[in-house]
Each structure stands twice: as C-alpha cells, then as structure tokens.
Length: 84
Image 1 (tube, rainbow, N blue to C red):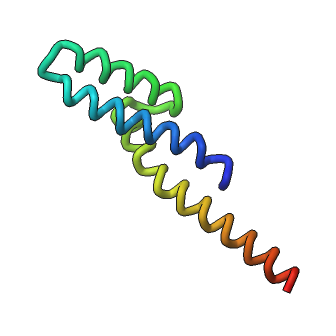
Image 2 (image 1 turned 180 degrees about the vertical axis):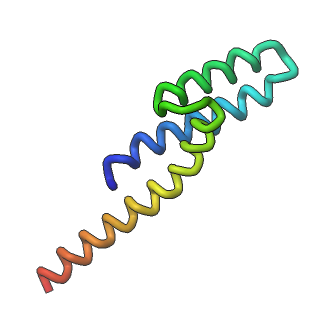
C-alpha cells in the first residue's frame, strides 16, 4: 500500500501537467509533441492503451493516497495500542 504512493504521485503529476500543457498549446504546433510525449510516458508506466493510461493514473492517485493514509493510521493505532 505504501509503495504504490510514490509511483502514483509521479504518474499523476506527469499526466495532469503534460496533458494541461499539451492541450493549452494545442493551437500552436508545440502541443502535439507534448501530448505524444505524455502518452508515451504514461504508456511506459502501464501496459494498456494511451487514453486508458491517462485515466488509470488519474484514478489510481486518489485511491493510492487513501490506502496510504489508512495504512499509516492503522499502524499508528496498532503501535499506540501496544504502548498504552
């Protein structure tokens, strides 16, 4: 649970920033290579289709944050219960 958070955070940041920059520059010619690069990076992180990669990493980020928080709270509660 805790190990998935750094990868999910990095992929979420890449997905949101690259897609926003690519769409923002789409009227210029620069937007197409940015979008293509974003989809290539996201495809390297997951083994599915490009638009599913984007959707996957945007959805997995909140789930990863929630499971990380639950794991930390659960372990803290267990340690607190043992030391009480």
